[in-house]
Image (cartoon, rainbow, N blue to C red; front, side, top):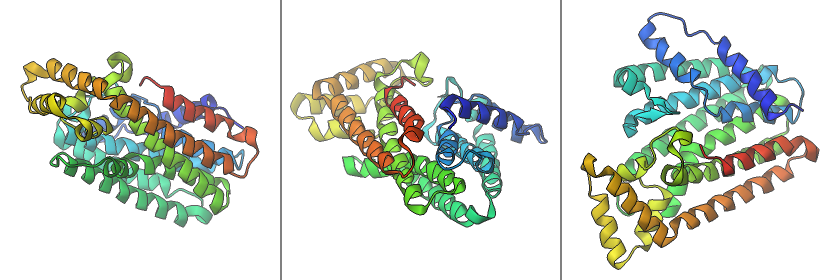
Length: 325
């Protein structure tokens, strides 16, 4: 069994081999720029770790792992445009460094390349993997649309939000694990258990992101703290606050959410955060995050391989929950 660090080293070398030195430069340079920033590379790592549970030969899973990483970064390019995000991984987003059109077109190429790489899956598993990936890609678009819809609604429920992040974030982690397992030769039951493990880790991961956007360290997190607050993004924290705030808290929260003056950005962030603290929604979010984490570990425990083989996945899951970035 390879360690997490050994697998990330393999992935780093394989990503460096990808050739983006093509013309027109304006199309390919942004792709190279995005992938050079590294990031956590969780999805391709999960693909190879899942494969490694069932075989020592990781080579057949590498193209799919790379494809999933490129696809994930494609979604970020478009997501950053829609969110008007200025930073990603501590660096200017592509639409900020270039422009919206560049980010859209470079993202489109990344999606196509992702399909090309995933299509290199061995023939025996190819249909299952392609069907899984295509279904996942559609679900991610559905999740993104829900996210956009929520911006214009004041009555979003917590369960609706959890379904949105399941689609937008969690399904790709599940897909990464199931893809690796299938290529590694697992049966469908174990592949599904790993999918469910990834799904629950993905839900917990996004709730952790919600917390970090408010309570994280900007220099570590790589994004501006309070960005979700400034954009009135319907996070789990805000939804729980809207459902719980009464009296003076409700009036203050409504007033803060109506602030659009950039000069009052810090005041808005501090005010909303103070309300979160008073209502205890940070604890509610942490409890829900831990609930999904425990569900994930329960699924992993049922996977039919020796217990010691699953240790690296357990450690990675734990690391994702205690991270500061």
